Structure formats: structure tokens, C-alpha cells
Length: 291
Ligand SMILES: Nc1nc2c(ncn2[C@@H]2O[C@H](COP(=O)(O)OP(=O)(O)OP(=O)(O)O)[C@@H](O)[C@H]2O)c(=O)[nH]1
Ligand SMILES: [Mg+2]
Ligand SMILES: [Zn+2]
Picture 1 (cartoon, helix red, strand yellow):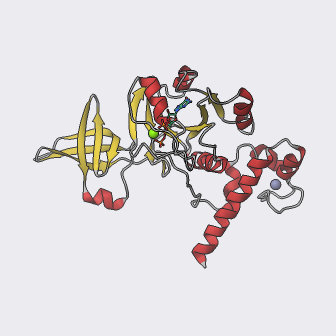
Picture 2 (cartoon, protein in one colour):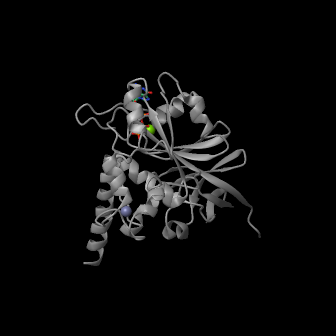
Picture 3 (tube, helix red, strand yellow):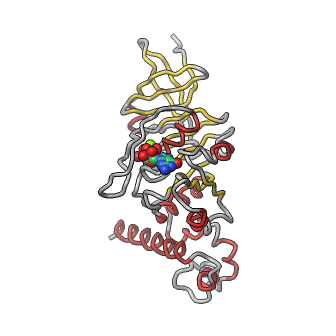
């Protein structure tokens, strides 16, 4: 007997239960053991489900366009990287998210939330090193400012929120959709988020889909060679031609146009220093792997 099968999208994962949306209907499904062995199933995956003894079972995961580990999502057009005045923005983490976006062909967008707490000068200073090549918007889930502009980045797309815990990812969804999802403040002691959201879930908004995700504070870039890191810095790329060596990694080489731009103040020094830190981190990781 031929089994009835349906194509759908994984919109929520809680432990080993997958919610799969097929057209207007949602099914709670398990996954075949072989799929769990091959690697995880992500929210955003396009899958085929079959029905066995009345149960929906994920039988196949379609090839992914892209995926990220942090946040744990697949098949996204864009990542809305949320920062806020508090918790204090971890710019190294943000640069790493941006690198992963460029690696995976995902468009990064910088979203400054809690703009009600920050001055324009503070917000603009954070945007400055990025704004020439990444769209930067300021919003507030509290005062509901900038939500329509945020909506333009969701419209007709599949996007995910990304960022530290407690920057207000879930609060933004609550504000956009008039929902009452659980949010929580910062831990007073360590001034960090409490990792309130524990699973990834897709919501429909502005004729698109947006994924609420779990906040994170650690990210390592391990899938690229440090000598290729430079290709994922859109702000460095136009300068590359001016470097003496084609292979210039903008670290120790002489006559480096990127380093000159940093000295002149045309490139942000702190962002360049983080580039060096990530370069060293990748190198160190590789060294440890082969030792
Ligand atoms: N002042 C102000 N506070 C906000 C705003 N948006 C969110 N908050 C507060 O920030 C805290 C964290 O919000 P959440 O929405 O839970 O943050 P999150 O990014 O989803 O955090 P995780 O789920 O842990 O990753 C809550 O106390 C919110 O009330 C805002 O626009 N302005
Ligand atoms: Mg949350
Ligand atoms: Zn150089």
C-alpha cells in the first residue's frame, strides 16, 4: 500500500517532537531514527511526512539552501541580528554572526532594540562601522517604534532573529504580533540574559516568516581557513587591491591597504582588532586539531 505523504516545513522543535506545517494544517511529528542519525533536523527544514499507525513521521529532509548552528535554523533569507543598550553588546559575537551569514549566503541586518534606553549618538556609534554595507535599523518593542520598518525585512521572506539573551527578540515578536510569549529581564548579578527562550519557532508576520530563537553568547568560527577570513569582510574587500600582496591577510604583511585605512581612521580600529582576534582564534583551533 502506498503511504500518503505530505510536504511541509518544520516550524517548531521541542525535544524530539517536530511541528510540521503543511499548507494550513500543522502536524506533530516524530522523525525517523535514520534522519536523527544523519544529523539534526532544523527549524526551517523542508520535509516530507508520512503517516504510520495514525502518527505523523518525518521521512525525508529536503536539501538545505543554508543553515546556521547559532541560532539553530535552516533555509533563511536573512538574519535580524538584535543588539540593545543592555545587555552590553558583544561586538565580537556580532562580527562572528555576520561572518557566518556571509558564509551561508544569508543577508545580515543589524537591529538596535530598546532604542528607548539609548541616545541616538550611542546607536549611531554602534552602526557606524557597518552601515555602509549592512542595513541598520533602530526599534523599540516597548514604544513600538520602527516595527513597520522591521516588517519590511520580514515581508515575503523567511528570517531569523539572532543575538544575545535578553536583547528583546521575543519582545519584538510580542510587539509585532500582539502575542504574550514569555520574556524575562536581565540577571541583576551578572547583567546577562537568562536564556528565556528555549526552543526555535517560526511565526508568520508581515506576509513572511520570522523565527524566534534562543539567545547565545559563544560562537566559534571553525569552518574556514584563517587566510580566507578576509573574504567575509565586505568592508575590507574594496581595499584589497591596494595591498602589496594579492594574498594579503591584512595581519603581518607590509604595505597593507587595510591597515593603512585603520591608521587613517577610515576603517574602525575596534572592528579590525576583532578581525585579528578571530583570525588568531581560527589559527589556534587549527593548530590544536593537527597537534
Ligand atoms: N526598555 C526596553 N526593554 C525591552 C525592550 N524590549 C525588550 N525589553 C526587555 O528586555 C528583556 C528581555 O526581553 P526578551 O524578549 O525576553 O529577550 P530575548 O532576546 O528573547 O531573550 P532570550 O529568549 O533569553 O534569548 C525583558 O525584560 C523585556 O521586557 C524595549 O524595547 N525597551
Ligand atoms: Mg526570547
Ligand atoms: Zn592587506
